[in-house]
Length: 97
Length: 75
Image (cartoon, rainbow over all chains, first blue to last red; front, top):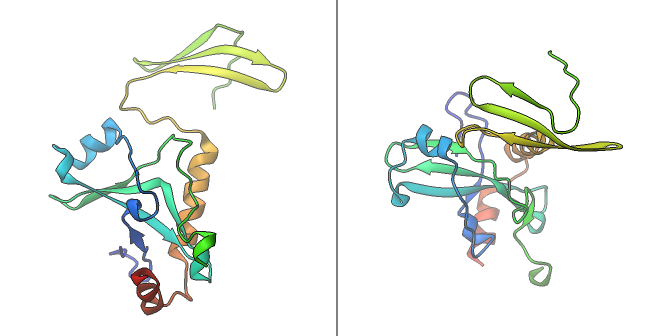
């Protein structure tokens, strides 16, 4: 994802299920309204990656995913009040390193 | 900024449909109950700050090699 105004700003996104198998969230009413979401199939979720130098330390922000309405390409960063998901969820397991 | 003093079980009302009730007071903590429409977003402020901070970090990865990233994801 790249900023249209500041083209040197970009985010690396992954489907959250890559980082968390049963990723499952409730999208707030205000986001549903703002994005014009009509049905579940309208929605695609992405998690922003942070990679601090070494790839094995990469983390995904599962607490604040990007919710996209694929029909109109409107998107919002949804912030979840859910203890289950972390802002810095490691995506490379220690055992894989 | 408006500053009000409230006792336990007292409340303040904001606008037509938001009510904040002081439900518990202890030495250095208060528990508040908030009645608001579902469309109103309510967050702990430090969570918003943490998300903002993480976004800035994610947008600032000058050393990131996209090809290397692609390779790593193939595994």
